[in-house]
Length: 191
Image (cartoon, rainbow, N blue to C red; front, top):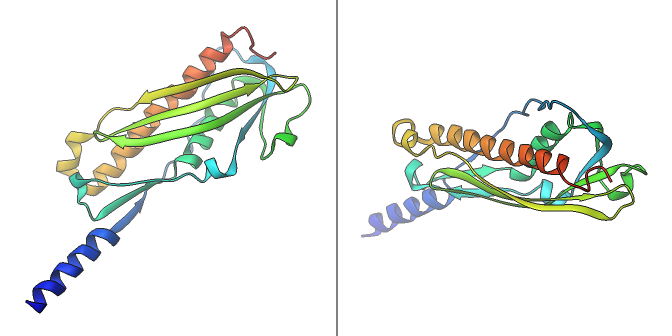
């Protein structure tokens, strides 16, 4: 009976502690657009949002595996890559005081990210402050990535890591391309 209890405790510890897999992402290539917007833009994201982490376990890859997705860093990298060639000038700032006079500020205001049905899902709120500092654009973008469900049973835990990357990549590309299209077509563009 005592041995059974020890085995049970060790199994619970293995499930709870398990293996932690940080899902690493490559910095995406900069997106190109047919024309750039006629203004300079600064990208800002609060430090706590940059440090946001999504962690989850999935039965399909074994409950002992925990997946850590540094979603804040990933969103910031994708915003940089997908916005930098969309403006006549583009730079990143750590604080709002770093925005140069006459430039617009693109602020990643909120991120809600999760994996469900073996697919990435995200809501990202993007605010734009115009040249005089007032908010001229605000929109919540939602995207759902493709599911990699079928691959998990064949490939196990490492196939899940790849599926997380691929699904998240689709979600973030869709969101930032949509933002560029919406902002370019808005009446308050570069104002």
